[in-house]
Image 1 (spheres, one colour):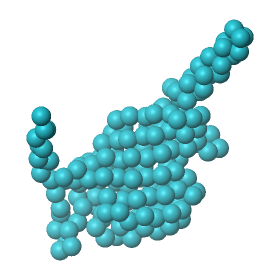
Image 2 (cartoon, helix red, strand yellow; image 1 turned 60 degrees about the vertical axis):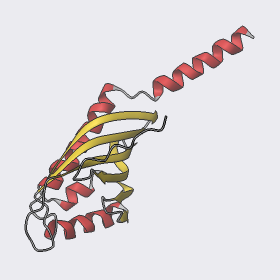
Image 3 (tube, one colour; image 1 turned 120 degrees about the vertical axis):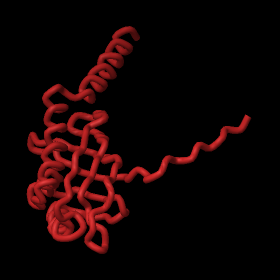
Length: 163
């Protein structure tokens, strides 16, 4: 019985350690996020799309869903000619959590400036949260599932708690 308990605790410890992620994985994930926002800010649709997995999914702040790297690239081509022409983006990684070897959940604070309104004028600074699942494929960390949420312009009202 002691051998079985020792074996189970060893397996559990290995599983927890393997899901922690190495310093190299953390650095590579942060670099992929940086590659995403830097290529976005350069208006380089191809480089932006290359941060996604081949079968990646993107859902933007407006709920528009795009599947596949090629379709994601084409969407960015259109956006960089329209409402995102001249826009700049930064994403600051807030948290990385590994769920299994080669699978990580990442969230990052987003600041987007220079977006265009329908009339062509520059819109306000937009802030939000980038929420992604990243997978390690052929040694490279890529965005497999991307969601973003925009923070409200005004403070969220405080809802009183019931006693």
